[in-house]
Length: 167
Image 1 (cartoon, helix red, strand yellow):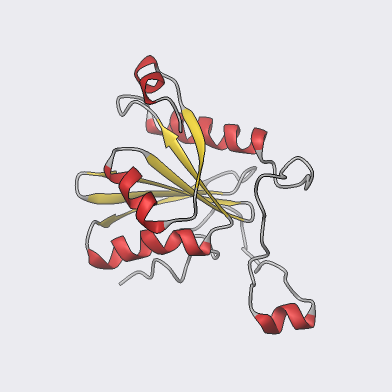
Image 2 (cartoon, rainbow, N blue to C red):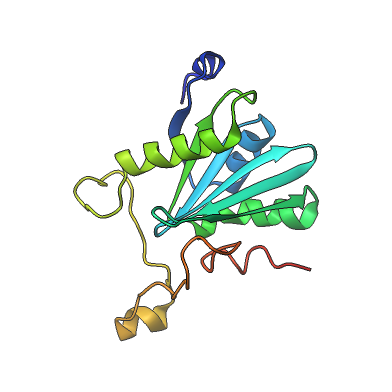
C-alpha cells in the first residue's frame, strides 16, 4: 500500500490495485485516483464534487479525452465494472492541491517505467490479456485488439466505449 503521507510532500505514489470494483470505489471515495489499463489505453478516474472525472490517453498520442459523469447509480456501476474489463488496475495517491494534469503525466510515466507492456519478462507481475476474450476469437486464433482510429483522440476509447454510453 502506498505511503499516503508522501502525498503531502508533493509525491505521486503508485501501487497495483486488485481488479476489484468495490475496492476501486473505496479508493475513489478516499480521494485517490484509480487507473484502468486495457492494452495500451489508460483510463484515469477521480471523484470530485459528486462527479466522476475521467481522462483517457494512449501513450505517444498527441491528445487524450476528458469527460465527467454524475456520481449516480448508472455511472457508479460502470466505474465498478472497470475492474472486470481492465487488464490491470493501479492506485495513485497524491495531494489534491497538485496540478491534476501533472499527476496524470507522472502516473502514466511511472506505470510505463514499471510495466511497459512490450516486455513479457519485465511485466511478470501483471498478466496482460488480449482485448477480445471471447471463446470464438480464441478458437479462431484472432485475439487482436480493435482498431482504435487516431489514438487518444476520443473518449472513451474504443476499449471502454460500451461501459460509458452517452445518453
